[in-house]
Image 1 (cartoon, rainbow, N blue to C red):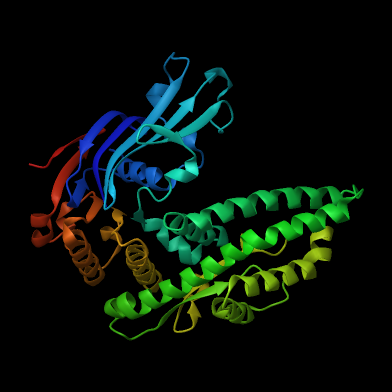
Image 2 (cartoon, rainbow, N blue to C red):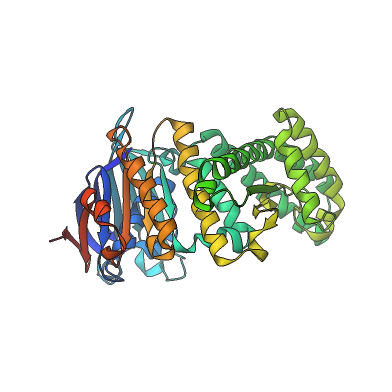
Length: 415
């Protein structure tokens, strides 16, 4: 998979950019705050419909465009993508209308439009058209940050490959929102017909929730195997073992310890079919019913899931060294590439933002060797890296890479 041409209009610091991208490795270098990261963000946004940096999508629109007198302000991201099944033209439009209503906190008349081959589609339909694996320095927060970070990682990664997962996750969230609204009303004393409606909504949670649980459990099991057996041993030399432990959101009310949760996750991964998972999930919802009514919220389910990176049975979140965490995240991301390639028979585009500066010489060499290997595979691979210092890269790597200099929102070949 490759992005052959990227076009940006009123996106971040790019008022207008048209950039042809070659296959293989592309190194974008320049000083900070010149637009290197914004290019990776644009590709990632087209792939996932989400920004890894902005809290609200309106922040992606070029500041100068926001200061204009135009009644309608539009940002546009476009990419010509080469896929094994043929080319695609992908487009995302960010549109602000009635600008007097818009404020910097994300309120006002704002909408997004997704377009594939000149045809407007649902945002969900854009997922999977372009697949990427993103490396960021802040990825260490997958180990050290809150559970929401780790759930977000699961959702973004799986939705690029598994359309059913993404659809059922959306269905689950819609029913969950309705159930939580009802539970809040019940907690406030509004109980007329509430018990019957609560049971209906609880039943409606089971099917989509079971799909989400099943797919997450299978994904983490496969990723653990790849990270340990293929990548992590190469980085550490076989001295440590890595495990990804699933912590299902069935016991988040304090009834289970961390080790017991891991055991529950192991059993979930071993459950043979969706019907068995659905039966167990329904039982957990029934057990939590009284607690949910008292708290006015749903206390069990995939929305309370978590997972942990364990090295030698030690959870890296609270107990790992910084070096262990960085190496484990590198192994995880490399495993993600292998998992996505196996699932789709296509190599995702690699996006690496200043990651080389965060690694020691040994791990940097291992990463760059892997990037070159993947980019050369069948002539279809592509990797985009950013750096403020090209000297971090070996002459062998620079000889293969296309180097582009980024300065003030302008891109030109390096001299």
